[in-house]
Image 1 (tube, helix red, strand yellow):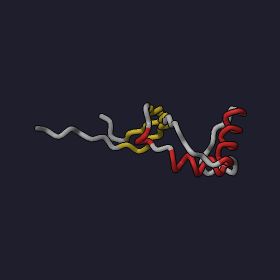
Image 2: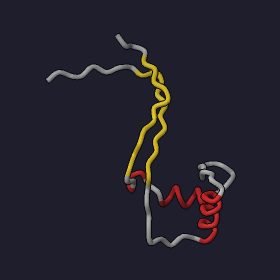
Image 3: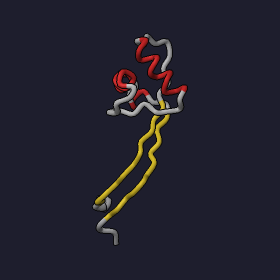
Image 4: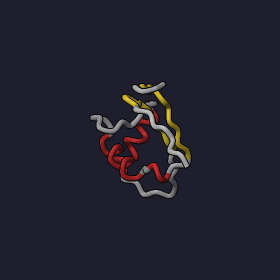
Length: 84
């Protein structure tokens, strides 16, 4: 069996999106209010921002990629240095 040739990638930029559905939860009221506010205003809860800090912490703890029902990768850029 021959080894497949590898290509040196100098830069790869992707956006990974996954969807998690949860039900029958107990959620702190302050987290609920922040998530509801973000939803009502059509904004995302962005990690490491100064807004929706309680929601950020709760979502990052409770929404895991391994729980996802769908997964997508959007490729923004790929640059290779040794393409023949």
